[in-house]
Length: 316
Ligand code: MEV
Image 1 (cartoon, rainbow, N blue to C red):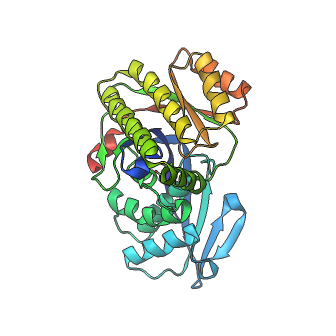
Image 2: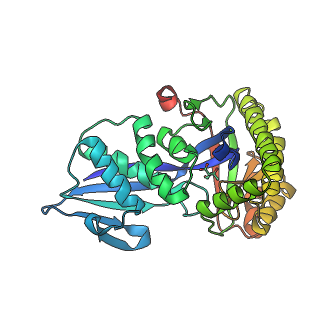
């Protein structure tokens, strides 16, 4: 039996604009994980057991656009092995369609588990590239940020089409991640933004430029340990996300509740329309803010510290 896992992720700054080649910052969230288990089978079948979806099916019966089947086939092709004689069980604690990268994390866990099972070393770059192919099935036109941050398990500064950059978090900081409980598929929000941009290109390009500038400032603030500056930058980013049309009443309610309870900044994270709100908290305020978020309707709140993963910093 071979097991591998992958963390969730959140986007700190720059979602949506990143699809249009502006920079974005994403960090792994280790409190939630996807897990893939590979077990040998006596017959030739490859059986997929997607525990959270209560679905058991054969690889050979999977439709062409099934993301789990796609990552199994792509990884086996890369490893030069025939997809046969094993079962894949998948379980994840990452909420689905909430902006925490559940689809990418499942794919990363499967690619890692298969590589381990067949005793081949795959680099983070290779895992990320394999998973990017399945991300296209989930998202349509993904920027690649989700597969990158999850495969590297490291804060990343991501610009589409450019080499991956990691960076050091000079002073760890803490986020409360609050789930609106509204499942919002990334593909729909990304498609709506694309149509809105086509209708008013100048306005959207300017909004994306402003989001990119916020992401650049945020990287500098994180690198110099200026946590105080981050809250204002999160609020500025949220205002721009509202302008591009991806906020929602539930997001605004949670963001306002967090700010009222003492958060230094709050914004949606991921595709928006639902999913998660992130709030910048500290040791003194975190319990109050988590309670305020739950009182305001959050389904759950995960408190996560953002820091450099020293073990993996050299992989980028
Ligand atoms: C989704 O986690 C982030 C978006 O920017 C889409 C993408 O980057 O592919 C909304």
